[in-house]
Image (cartoon, rainbow over the protein chains, first blue to last red):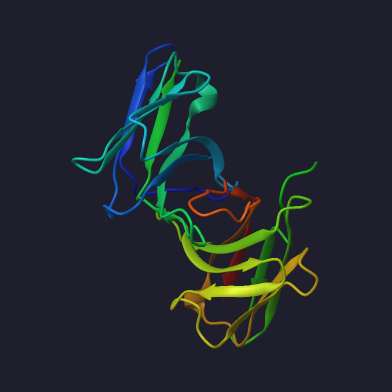
Length: 113
Length: 118
């Protein structure tokens, strides 16, 4: 299958460690943010989202942190597993309209056993 | 499988030919989006539909591109007179929008159609 993100920054972690993937978003007016996971040859898969009225949101093994002051978003993955290896994209949008997603550049996560 | 489906998954064509892609959204999703993704980049918005109405088109969508969603269910994206620069992954996403001010709709993506123009 095709390789997604050939020249993306890569985060390499050991299996079982925690991973932190960072993203800087562009529009200070954006009020809804989403993290997607994309495996090679597949479409983006929804992981977790957060609205701008929140600073933190937790899911299963994942936590998203939002810092609106510096327009920064992070995704924390606990106890990283080999199946977490993929390219991760953050996306921003302005709710209430047609919610066009604006994607960041992406980060490749490589999990080593 | 009740997710978003796209057909074909891969398309190889010669420059100048026309191609058409199909997207079947998640049942009862009223919004449908098309994005384009090139290697090493995040998806870029092309256009979106709410039910059968095409409500927004990106400047990326040249006159050679046309999209339809005739009955508010599946959608097609056609590219006429393909160029090598059209080579990309074409992604479809769907969502259910409540229509209330300030509400958000989570977009779920299909597997994409990989287009290669020779």
